[in-house]
Length: 78
Image (cartoon, rainbow, N blue to C red; front, top):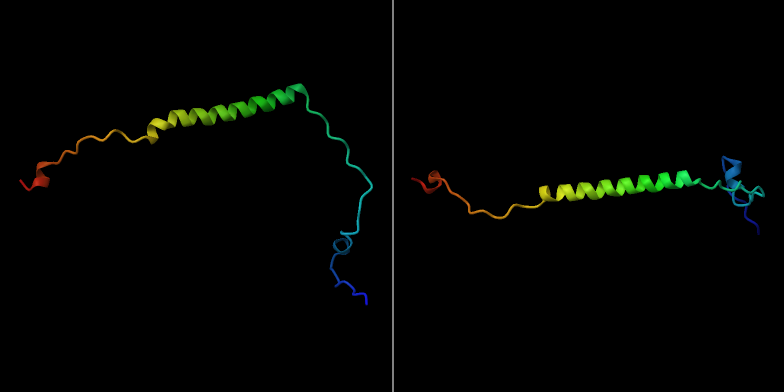
């Protein structure tokens, strides 16, 4: 009728699905205005750095306009 569970080496694993805590975690502390401003400033600095590196790096990533290919006289067999 009733099947027993297989033995588990750690008892707390077998009872984990039945355990419910009645202790509530403490409420989170609100961040101060200085902490919020610091987080915004850090985020803004990171975004500005990424945007600046992209703007400064774009000329290096672009290909120069095609110039006529010069062949040496050695390539003509002369």
